[in-house]
Length: 190
Image 1 (spheres, rainbow, N blue to C red):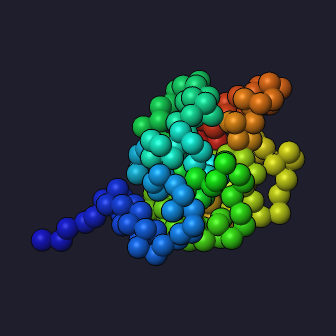
Image 2 (cartoon, rainbow, N blue to C red; image 1 turned 120 degrees about the vertical axis):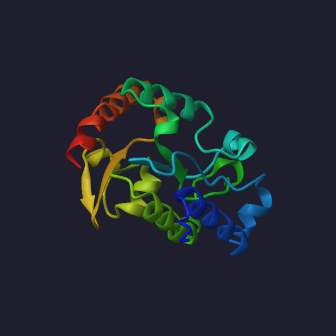
């Protein structure tokens, strides 16, 4: 009898591999835990942020703080729940004092992120903020391409501003909601 592994089992192996490989050991040592990903391992959409914050580090799940609450609201606006999508970050450990992830940290985690995407095989990859966009769609400026689907290396990406940006800049909130509203139509055409 041939036993097939599920996507979740494959994702669990990558999570274990990150720990075994001691990826970004300095970050790991000052973090509470690895924040790998959350949601459906068979999702049509994967959302990718930059790195865990304080709440994420404590709970072990991405986007559980204020930015996550806003993300959940926007998902509801388009008829989806967190369980319908998969969400992760490029960097899987919290940088100290929520600083931006360093280029070498993003580079160290990128092969594992790519493996996650290979397993899930989403129809649409939504980058949240410039850090995830820069890693996956190099050379673009988020202020110019947000809300515009991009096909790159056989995948469809939708660059969006990070939900946290809307928390600090009220004008950004409506832009993000408007861009988010495009997701159902983009999914239909991919």
